[in-house]
Every structure is written in C-alpha cells, then in structure tokens.
Length: 86
Image (cartoon, rainbow, N blue to C red; front, side, top):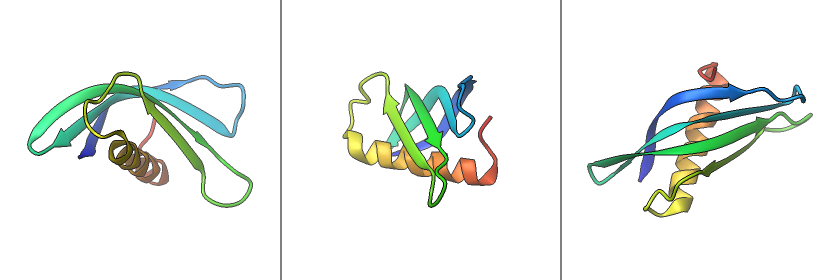
C-alpha cells in the first residue's frame, strides 16, 4: 500500500508565511489495484529541525490508513525538498 502520485494539487492562501496548505487527489496503489482519494495537507516550517507535515484523507481510502499516511507524508516531503509542490 502506497501513494504513487498526486493530482490536482491546489495551494491554499494562508496568512502565515511559515505554514503552507494544499488540497489534491492522491493516487493509491495496493496489490495491482489503484484508487484515487482526495486529501488535504500542510507543511509547517519550524525554526530548527525538519518541517512538520500533516495530512488527512477526506474520504475513506478503504485500505489501512497508517501506511498510506506515512507514504503520503514521505512523498510530500520529497516533493517539498525538490521544489515539486505548487
């Protein structure tokens, strides 16, 4: 179970410059089956250490939630590090 891609990413306007928020659709894959589920996420920059990433699915993914959230957060961290987020 993992998140293999993100679609329709939209950045939300926030009044705080150190918190960025997005909404989008995650492409999920499990044993050859794929599904798409909407999600929201945010990345908060801290003064020291790694940024804090929070994410949640807006619909039930019908698969175990913790591995999917871990995979989604890892993908978001990689995209943020490489400048791939809008």
